[in-house]
Length: 130
Image (cartoon, rainbow, N blue to C red; front, top):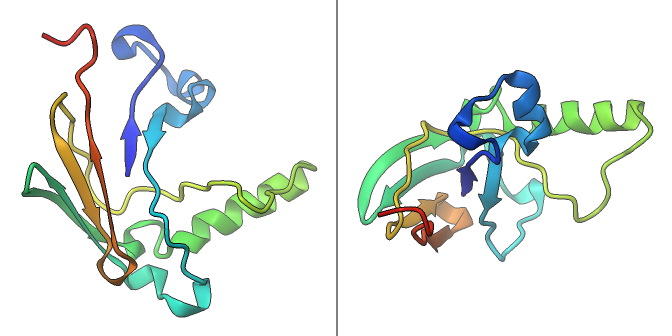
């Protein structure tokens, strides 16, 4: 689960601001069970996103440039070319598998990735939220 957010007040940002803002990635939730790549067809992995039990987004691995590894390979090649290769343990976000949905404090989010498992997080209200 990636929670999109911005450190720029009021979201008054341009593309260069988005890059400086870590691509507007506020936080992310990872599963705790790594799966070797030769044991999963990432292109076919289904995704169902539920908020408070209601399915709000669906997709599959192919939604990310046809295959999530296309984005990962581009990043790995680009980082190597710039002299800063990816290292073991680096987290790489390859892109959305389905449409986003705004989150509200108090909601519980579940991303179910079929045989890969599911992750759950609870969104705490911000201090400025009513």
